[in-house]
Length: 346
Ligand SMILES: *Cc1c(COP(=O)(O)O)cnc(C)c1O
Image (tube, rainbow, N blue to C red):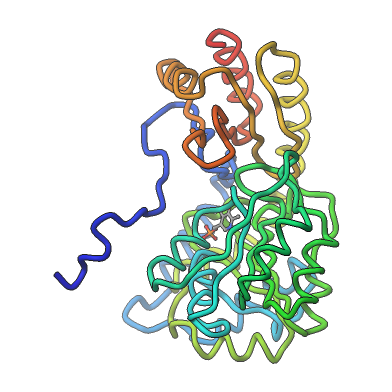
């Protein structure tokens, strides 16, 4: 009764079919070396699980600041960037005014808005999946207070024209640039602009660079915005073990993570070149750790790949993505097996 309005609620869906080659969730395919994991296990043993963690996350903020060349005062931590999206949707502006985001994009902007019945102002991306001024102007007419731009965008892989993002920010909309995939991109980040203040912030995550299981995301904002958002987040939203593990990985594992990112980028280049040679497949450019392809029959290809123990994300149900599949970059040997399977099924 009290929850009736969620009976037909469209929740966030993920691929759960088990498969040996999992290229469906944009994770880092490489785990950490055993030696580092042993070190982590030893450090975890020393923690007092009966105590609440440090609610200011002083130590983890310092480590993230060091890793990304930021100041701790400009960082707000979230339980994954999903939580930061949720907090911002609930906090920014007048809840009667819409949340603006393009279609297709990352589903959580809509999910978080729908949960609190906040209206949305959506608009279509152009044929290259980029932002288009006329579409943006129509969305702006609906007077949104907050806008989300995932750049590089998920599930399309491309980065957006930065001029259009700036244009929205200049129109008095609180603008959130979701840089979940920026570690794989050679384009300029919006973080410097976020530090300057005003109404633009950046959100990032450790999920795509190898720590998806920890649930650590962060926002980069000028000090004033950062302070305010820090006040309204749940007090202990990052678990004690997650804090500790992230600290160890980003310091002692810094070189490993950066090397893994480079391998993923070179594998992206190699794999995309190979896929683009296959007939009957359209491949879209990518700045992320995944890429999008269009095939003749996505449902069929998706199913046939699963039969060959390869799981990719079927995004063909999303608007504007008919017959599209999203493929995460795996380890070199996984990518080879995916290539072989794909050639056999198309
Ligand atoms: C994966 C993803 C996120 C969520 O990341 P978490 O930190 O794991 O919650 C946010 N935005 C985009 C665009 C993503 O693809």
